[in-house]
Amino acid sequence: MLRLHRWSGLAIALVVLCVGFTGALTTWQQEIDTWLNPDLLRVEPVAGATQSLDHLVAAAVAVRPGLEVAGVRLPQSPGDSVEVSVSPRSAGVFAGWYVYVDPHGARVLGSRPFDPDPWSRRGIVASLYEFHYSLAASRTGVWVVTIAAGLWIATSLFGVWLAWPRSMRGWRRALRVRFSGSAARINRDLHRSTGLLAAAFIVTVLATGILLNFAPQTATIVQRFSPLTSEPALPVRPRTTANAEIGWQGAVAAAQRAEPAGAPFAIYRDAARGLYVVRMREPDAIHRRGQTRVYVDAGDATVLAVWNPRLGSAGDRFMSWQNPLHSGHAFGGAGRVIVFLCAMAALLFVVTGVPLWYARRRAHTRR
Image (tube, rainbow, N blue to C red; front, side):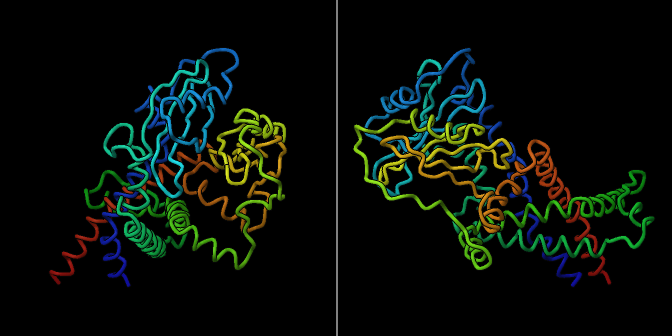
């Protein structure tokens, strides 16, 4: 069993290094993206009201004619731009552009494709995210990352069992790193103390990552124990004509009237059903984008439904916590710091564990 622990640890070390490093970076992906692309994502803050959302959307469509507006991400702080997603009308085609507009003067700042050059400053953050969950190897990569995460959970738990102190004095010794000793001793102390201190957090991040990678399968299992609601049942209403639509600004206003405590994060148009879907960020949001969705009739601004998974079934609540726990956003800035430190601890655990494996392997060969 001990040999299996060492071999499995070495086998997944490289995957953990890659996934852990990119995970540490994606914890701050929004900040990194803003730092790399301030010309698109930031504007000079101006006091006073912003332009109408319909006016901003029209400005974005003018630079990418012939495409349909799929959604709009709204500013969350002073100085943020408005992101308008435009794509072809054909369903199932991942093609289109993100167009960025100054909310004060309706000036188009620029655009980038949905699938930019992965090594450019426009696309590096999206590439890091893709590499984090799939090693940029499509579904095969998802399986590799998931299997590595499962083995890492098993080896972490077994390693904690091996190093678990039997007394309070043992805990003090196990968590102490004596830098006055030899390099091998310092390495061993770091490996043991890091594993004991960070194991619970690392296992939580790994387990939620597995569930997110296989979200449909996870939902199927959860459904057996508690009903899941992807969206509320909407009343059947006659479709409105395009000329009668309330527009993007009217839909956001209706959503704010229905949820005055929330802040609109994004809005999407469902032309097939004749409605807008406004995503709202709750005051006690555990997800950085919010999880409440307000369904607004595109014809008369009637609020058809308000849906928040945290107010749903136990299964809905369980599923709603997976992404915030994995990313750390469930606990605000402190949670993100913890997840970042977990990623760094995983890297340190691998860096210190490989020399230990090699030394024991060499000793076994000599015997």
